[in-house]
Length: 205
Length: 79
Figure 1: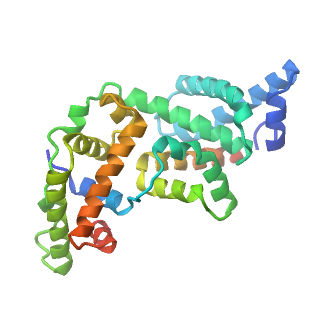
Figure 2: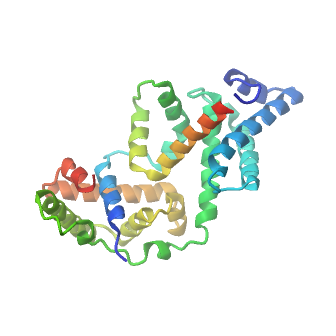
Figure 3: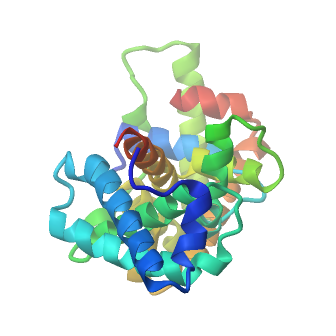
C-alpha cells in the first residue's frame, strides 16, 4: 500500500484549512500517482521521468480544483488515478501526433474487398464474406461523405479522435457524431441488403 | 493506398458494435471512474454504465485508457 491516507482521509485532508495537513496530503497524492504511473508508463519507454513529473504536477492541481466535484461514485484513489491517466494519455497523444499530418495517415485510402478475402479458400463462408464486403464498398462509395471516410480511415490508421478533430478543425464530440452517423449508415445499409449482425460478426471474427 | 485486412476487420467490428444511441468519448471518460469502481467491485452495471460498457467495446482509444486505469490502480495497490 502507498502513502498514509486511506480513501476516507483524502478529501478531508486535501480540503483542510490546516496548511500542514493539506500539504502532506498533496505530497502523498503526488507520491501515489507518480509511483503508479511510473510502473505502467515508464516500463515500456513511452515516457520519461520528466514527463511524469509534469503530469503529476498538473493532476495534483486538477484534483485540488475539482475536489468539490468528487461525488463519491468511486473511491477517491480510483477517481484520482482516472484523472491522472486521462491527463497522461492526452499529453502523450498530443506529443506523438503533433507532427503527423492527416494526409500521411489517410493517403488515398481505398476499400478493396478482395484484400480481405482468401481467394484460395472458396467455400460458403468465404463467399458470404465476399458478398458482404462488396456491399460494404458500395455503401462506402455511395453513402459516406468524403469527410466521414477521411475520419474513418484516420481512426483505422490509429489516429486518436481528439487529434483527428484538431486536424479537421472540429471538436471531439462533433467528430464522434460524424463517425457514429457513418457507422449507422453502413450498418443500416448492410441490414437493408439482408445481412444480419451475425453475418457482420462472422465477417471479421 | 488500400485498407489492410486488419483495418477492414476492425471496421466490421466497429459496425457490428454500433448502437443507435452512444456516448461520445468525452462523455464516456467523464464516467470512467464510476464504471471502473463498479467493475472492480463486481457490482451489476445498469443505466448509464451500460452505455459506457458499449462505448468501451466499440472505441479502442477509450478502452485503452480504461485498461491503463486498471493497470495503474493495480500498480498503486502493489506499492
